[in-house]
Amino acid sequence: MSDGLARIRATLDVRPPYCSGTCEIPIEQSTLFYSTATSGVRKINLLFPTQDQLESLHEACQLAVYGHDHGEVTKKLGASRLDATAFATQFSLENTGLVDAVGQSLLEDMTVGRDIRLELYELNIYGVGSFVGPHKSATNSDKMFGFLDIVFPTPHTGGIYSLRNNEREWCVDFATMLSEAQIPLVGYAAYFNEVEREIGSIISGHRLTLSYKLYFASGGDSPSATMISALGPFEPSLKTALAEFVNDPKVLPNGGYLGFGLRHQYPVSSEMRVDTLRSCLKGSDAIIARVLNRLPLPWSLRVLYRDRGSHSEQTFVLHKFISDLSQQDLVWSHWGAGEKIGPGAEFVRFVDEFGNDDEKRAADYSKYSEDVIDIIQMTEMPSVTNVHSQYLAYGNEVMMGNLYGDICLVAEVPAKVLY
Image (cartoon, rainbow, N blue to C red; front, side, top):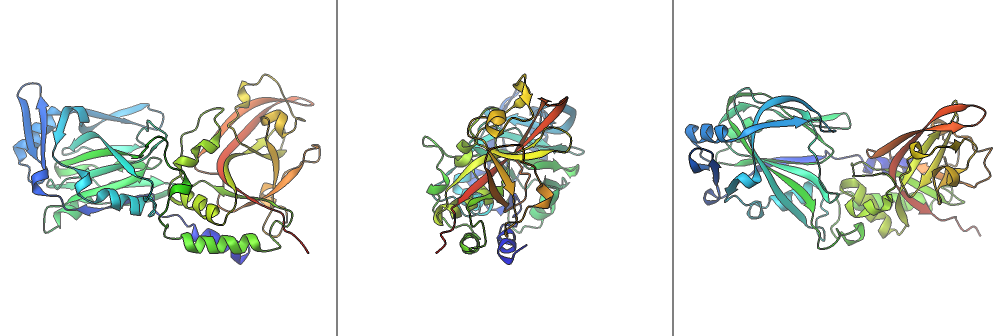
């Protein structure tokens, strides 16, 4: 690997997909009102609750049920909840500075021109023995990018807060963090929607939390990467490294593509044009897009397909749309990229920065008449956002084919002008 490519990958070393900490809130904003079936409206002080208040709120909540990614319910857990329609609170995040803190840390300083909208959606209270197993919370909009949990300083122990993503894990001990504070503080954790969350068992006391959904605000459509005007923390060094890499005469002398695997998860559906996701890019994905705009290098979001049609043969295809070959009755193994995947699809050949074939992604295009374009893998693929379909491939015999697709950001590098 060249020094230039190593610098780019090191610059893009991913920051944790969450941020957490503590925040002070005014005492006058710490009251929450809720209703019960038997005794009407009640209230609780979120900063200084009594034991009776906590037990009364716990009784008023319904048992929460958490499932896994696809919604199947595995077991009922001891976390109780109230939907946001069942309570009202004076607590206001807008007055805490937390919105800015989340934007600066979670979105890597890119909130200028890209406002965040918060939606309060539930209250949770956990008693002794309560826990929440590993799960990912459901998303309901392509503008939604994450969640924010506010933990109030109710006396308790246990309940370690664990977050997992891409085989990495981070833990936050809110019970210890809040008990050691000299003044009443609230804890917070904001995380992207692809992050798995788990809450360990409460050993003593009660934990009380408010949970919010995080959206890119839309005054119409969400702003694209070109509207973000604040510098990300590693943007200058990434821009310098990419410019030097692309301007090296040995890199893609005949032109080609730079491929960046996406580090975050985005909503996809069959037949969608994936470039519509450019308004939803977040974190390091959005910073790459911004740097490419500044160089400038044209870029788009594509699906990189790895097609295994028969035996060990494989080809790589770039396309603008998500294709589902399982819906086709007949797929011939000799078909080219456009015939098989759809109009506009094109074959690509993985090469290293010196133009040599990438042995880990060797492919055979000898039986196809279409042009093959060189592409360099800049960051890890497969991406976090990916698709898969199976199909019947017809050739000398009928076999099951597999089409694996990864949504990636592809930058176009023009051919070098040689004098």
